[in-house]
Image (tube, rainbow, N blue to C red; front, top):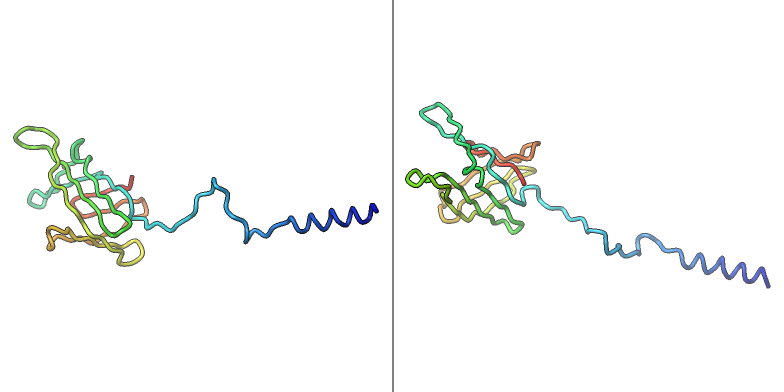
Length: 140
């Protein structure tokens, strides 16, 4: 009788073992998805003006409020800030809708929807910045 009971318990324990392939993830686990590194909000960290071949740093507390937001649907928004010369207030200079696409690994292009002639190509550097020539952006 004891042998039968021991065999029954052993048999039940084998049945109760599960294969990891069939287990459902815990509710606390976050599913991993492959999100493109460009998606998110990028903040202006440096703005340079060209004064006849002499670059002038135009970065200030106002210009660094500027952002580019790339969304996962291939669209985005650019909002630039600058100091109004007349009022000396920090104001939105431009608010633009963009369309972006991935050209290759870490290489992208975008065009301004309302200004078809305005487009740019860029790469994401190892330090998570985008250099658009006169401006440098850092992912937030």
